[in-house]
Length: 554
Image (cartoon, rainbow, N blue to C red; front, side):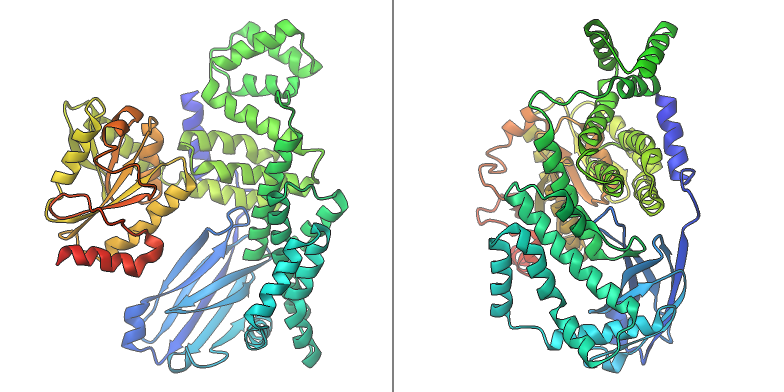
């Protein structure tokens, strides 16, 4: 089994499962009259793209600005048309990319004052220029905030069957005015109206989940129908909301005792991934796969085989149960999306071995080419850290084997203090004592919680403000028994700083020391090693948090 997982990691990280080579768009251009101030603020321009399976998580491609303001970067593209973002300084603009070459030029002197500071060339040049004109028109003719709020309130508080049409009408109103004044390119119209459909659909799915409302099959298709050739962030967002809605429907449709997986599927899973199987086991499994039937005694026998490898097989059985329940509820394209959604929603809280296993199992089941490529990209990104994670795990275990409480680097910028068999207060005290004279910003997080992982990532910005001689970022994972996932999560999320992991028993011993009765997930410890009574601010209040830390350094 171990050799199989290592082979899976190798195949996936080298892209063996990719159906075809991913195309690229070459984005180049020039920032004319590049100033020293803009260069200091933004020595790189950025192009970002969205994976359809990862709403809200964009992949950024930096391009260094040359002395004359020129730049060039190659960005992979999966869909025939993809909405991307170009970022320079504090300015940003969307553009539609296709395979080929595209140029974006601007003048530094008019970057923040011109209505249309960006000039497009190359593929989709006229489309991008007209879309920029539309966005300027939309901003200028946007209804006032109170009118907009009333429109949203009526749509969201009324009958859900009217929500989509009401919101779609509101979202397309500026375009109707724009199109009445000039001829609009078909691709621009499709781009704008597709975003409007996606934005309206996202609200409907949110409302359906909030009200536990079931959308009818015909109405559901209205919400998910759209061009398969055009990918925009709004589409990824709407599909992510659909994933949440689909999960609710799957749970609603699953009997209280759980829906039984088909015998044929269960036998296939055990035959492919089970451990310790004899020749007789495989013969019996072959019969189950052929007949798709089993007696009560056979079911007990299959359960015993499952128990030999519960961590692996339970994930696959849970996935199959969910897809089996979803199959009569949704169409084939929606099911393809849900297969990728399942992996993406669990990958951040799974070990690399588990992610590789699930990915290897799901990948052949996805039929849509674009979704298949997007899936492969997500998995490859997750598994790119395999070697680094493996080394970090080895270094961490070496620290663990030493007696007492020990500290050391397990990866670049990641420093761990550990003492599994010691009181939590001993581990925490060493971490604090090692940082006397520095302000310590404590982040309480868990690798199994996305909100905690996001908080941990957001706190990284503080390292760019304060020098190491004055400041330490200390991550504390509470009630955590899974050290393997903990090590992998800190490495994969690039959580530079100091780390300790406290088991449930160890957590009890630091309740008073860290004032765990307080609900906030962050703490501040003074340079003298004292926990501050005044509540520390979270990274979303970044400027105020910086001031709060600076006050302790005076």
